[in-house]
Image (cartoon, rainbow, N blue to C red; front, side, top):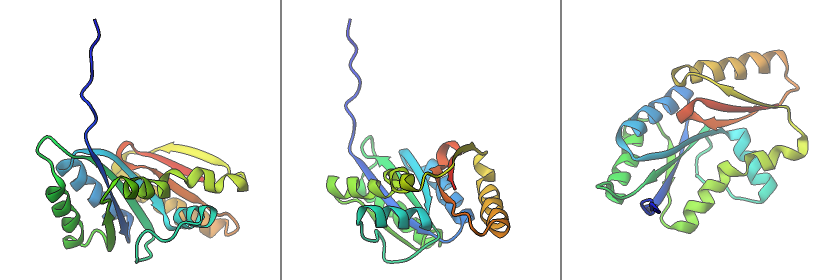
Length: 175
């Protein structure tokens, strides 16, 4: 007997620029509660600049932000583009995000994902020391703050490229 799965539904991506880790976490809590979430990925401005330089990509947003969030959602089952647009507006109304965009088609969807997916490839030539760290989601802002403020103050010669899967508390620290 062969069982078939439900065909995948249409997916869309939101890319947000945020000014702080606390606001990033606010975005996550709201997103998890209100959207059919498939992925919630975070990366820093340094990670973004590495991808843009290595792959000749332009800035995805008009504003420069210290942190970026890529949110992938699944449309269908009562969740449509209008509700997704309302959610995007909510991030701005709450002042969690300062800039953002929503994929309008499959090409934009794929292009927005490149900013996250190409990070490891972009930094590979520098042969970074890679660390995958699991952190309780609610502790992520404090953990990253310690890394960025303590490590950078003690070791000004180290460049740390930080990105990860906020939804499962998995961070990639590459120095």
